[in-house]
Structures are given as structure tokens and as C-alpha cells.
Length: 227
Image (tube, rainbow, N blue to C red):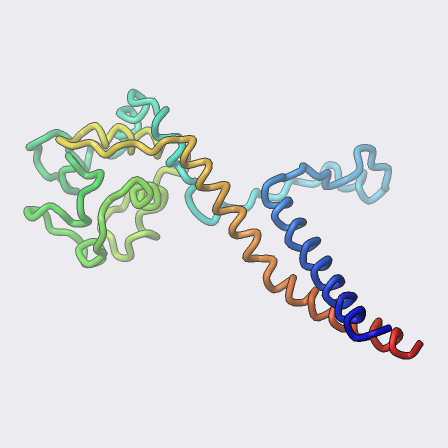
């Protein structure tokens, strides 16, 4: 067997391994089959003994669920209703007063700590940036986690539907409401991000696979040259 044929064998093995790993990872990112955690008919005595055991508490989500795709179809009436939880501390009408918290007219798209006539916490005053839809979603989910040292004592809105509704409604309280994201474009972007993350995750695994393939190819070369 000549050197050219040996090189072809090595290259073929490496390419095949890489192709299988990458295709498998991308496919897993785009398709999420529901797998059973246990057999449909468990007859194990251990399983039956634990049938009456108290259910484990669900894990708390790491952060707020994205709401961009929900904004265009958000219920404005529900948003106004949700805002009543905030009305004791915030006015939202144009020219309205500051209360315990600042007036929120025009808040969507405004800079952090944009009211010159309100005394903000240092964390809020020094944050920088603007109140976009995603920033408001993060803040309303758990204010004290998003802005360290904020004076706002509100516990947050845990339901994504509530956050989407109140943010969409607040957006109408403005001289220049911000254009709402197109749901189809948001979902397409999220799908692209998921695929990109899946491909990125394959890098280390592919490197390990290539290392193993190189070792196997080396063994194949040794075997071939020994013939």
C-alpha cells in the first residue's frame, strides 16, 4: 500500500467522524424529541414503593423567559391591570408627578435614570444604557437582582405573560412608542442562535473525536504498512 492510499484512509476516517458529530449535534438542537423518564409500565418494587412519596419541588428558572415574541400579541387591557401593582409607587401619565418611584411616561427606549427631578439609587444612576424591551423584562422579573442596590422593593413579575403585557402597555405611554418586534423574526433569530450554540458545543467534542480518529488511523497505517 503506497503513501497516497494511506493518507486517503486517514483523511476519510477523520472527515467521517467530524461529519457524524457535527450533524448529530445540530440535529439535536433543532429537534427535541420527548424521551420517557421511566418505562410506561413500571413493575419494580422500588418504583411502586416510591409512588406515594412527595413530589420534588420544580427547579427555579435561572432567569426570565424571553418575551419579545409575545409583545405584538400582548393584551393591553391585561397590561393596564398588571400595572396597578406598580401604581402606588409610579405615575405613568404625561406630565404626571414622581411618587416613591419616578414617573414612567416614555420609559420604553429612555435612558436609565433619565428623570432629572428624581433621586435614583447609585446602582440605577450608574448603570448606563437604555430601557429596551429585554432590559425591562430582566428588571421586572427580579429588580434587586438586575440593579444592585436599587431602592425598588417590588418582588417582581414571575409570569412572562404579565411582563409582556405590562411592557407592551407601557410602550403606549409615550410620544414615540418603540416598534414592537416581529414574532416570526424573533423566533427565526432564536432558532439560529440555538443552532449556533449547538455547533459551538461540538468543537471540543469534535476535537476529542479527531484525536481518537487520528489514533485509530495511526493504528490502521501501522497495520497497513506491516502487510
